[in-house]
Image (cartoon, rainbow, N blue to C red; front, side, top):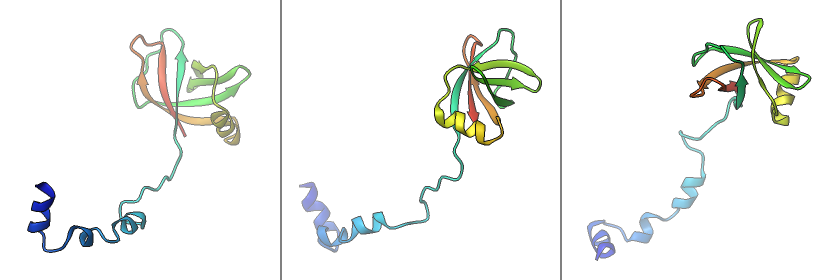
Length: 116
């Protein structure tokens, strides 16, 4: 009954209304997704006693045992096993990258950092 009602209420047969619909969906439109910049989010282990809040700007730098996270001159944590993509991005930046603190863990021992 539902399909018959739709066909009777519309002026065109059902097939004619959707004719070329898939082709229109595949063509570019106003709302196409364009990725401009890659952001990588990683979890860092924080040192005890760090007072951070979401939105803080941090420095991610390469070290011998992974990546070190610092707030200016003070080292506040580390990323133990970074992905090869993140390591390469930090290396391309001269050993440093800018990170922004997204969230601090419930107990204050971990943090999610978005690295550009």
